[in-house]
Image 1 (cartoon, one colour):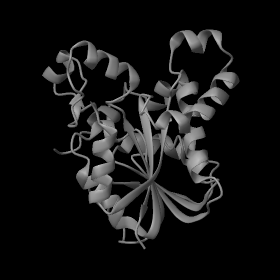
Image 2 (spheres, rainbow, N blue to C red):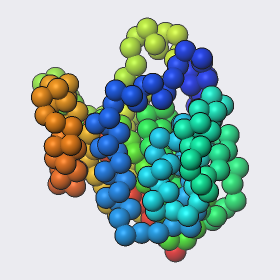
Image 3 (tube, rainbow, N blue to C red):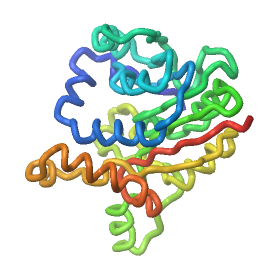
Amino acid sequence: MPERTNQYDENEHSYRTYWQDRSYEHDAEVAALRSLLHGRRFGHAADVGGGYGRLVPVLREFADHVTLVDSSKKQLSDAEEFLADQSNVAMRLMSAGRLDMDEASIDLVTMIRVMHHLPDPVPALSEIARLLRPGGIAVIESANLAHAANRVRYAARRQRIPTEPVDIRSAENRERDSIPFVNHHPRKVAEQLAAAGLTVERTLSVSNLRSGKLKKFVPHQALVRAEGALQSPLAKVSFGPSMFFLARKAG
């Protein structure tokens, strides 16, 4: 299925504004990246589908050079302003499924908050594997179909959680053919990574404490510290709404 990007090019849709009230979710993802990349150093990183560059400053902590890739012209235009004070950052207009970059040219590839727009992520994962040098690292985030609350819902209906992606758009959005929004089963994602030549070495469960009540009554920093402490142990049961996979290309 071709990638839909027009939603992110509409003038009324501001992804930067979307993140203004999501500091917990942002800091949870920053904690996950720092945990997975701790102690590593990369020459060249690529952030695929990185939008306006929200996570590029974090990647620059670990990489000498970062290429921000996105299929939305508006997102990259916003990135020019957002990343104005960042050195050694390049920007490329490309889709995740067709990355016009040299084979085996990248040491680290991240793809965060993109899989939920990809009912079929295989082309994107194959492209990521192609870009990576032997021994290179990929950090892939996926909206988790098998999170704890969903397991309860499916169990109440006496149904098994599907292994294929599930479209969670409203009927209205499906009717108007909005941009896809799917959840993936983490076991299936691991299989797809392996099929692309990427071996999963570590997983994290992320945004485990995503709750309006917790955000309201628990101080932000305390919530983020608890989140960081829970990401690794809760990965064993795929607890949270988001899963991070660290996978390595053989080499």
